[in-house]
Length: 292
Image 1 (cartoon, helix red, strand yellow):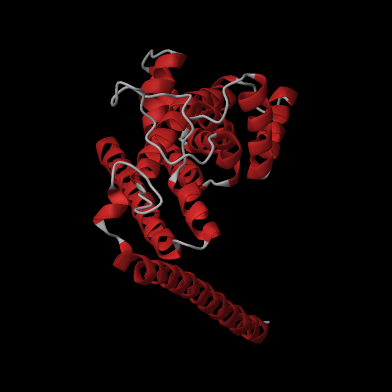
Image 2 (tube, rainbow, N blue to C red):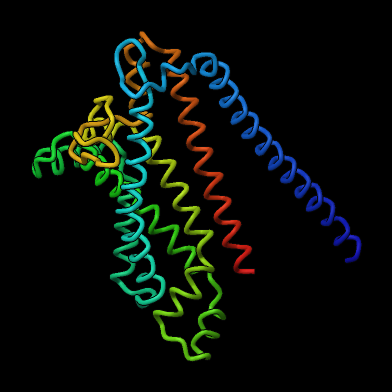
């Protein structure tokens, strides 16, 4: 019996070593692919980051990306301003107030997962038919914002709900024992504890917003102009047709006349995404320190 146990010990050990080697190999492969992509974009785009690319006005000569960059910032901020309160509110209801296992809760989760799996081109067609045509907004910043808000709403909902459910029940029980009500417990105890997970969902949402092309071509249009009203900044014309950085890059490379500037736009887009992710990670770290 003793020999049999020793005999079975070695295959398990070799299996653990093999699994560890596969995990490390996969991690190294993904890191190498990421570094190659970043290096290739930097190699092709950095030499063409000229001052003319950041001119306030776009024309066929300078193919400035500054209007697209400004439009991307506004598109991201407005889409999050619409989707984050709705998604977080729905997540709070599902995690803290709804009866767990109820049919309505299961139905909402099924609808959320289904909505998250719909291709972006379908969202774009819906946005064009409803916001652009039916509501009469035309190709505009507002139509693009509403379409993107619908796209990222399931992502924010699921990430926020999982983060809230992951908060220990001892936090809630301790708050109730001290006489705190349900609302105060949720907003003063549970939400701060779930903040890193919620921020992770926001980071994924921002990545989807800035990388979206198909849905915005059908809703926001492709006009390379600043989204400002006649009075100029900070007045914003939400009914102006705009293009984001991803749409701008698509337009440049599709024409085939400004491929190098398209790589420079890709490098700028990469820098924007990395900057947003770094800022969100820093905020999550600060929240974690404050909690501890």
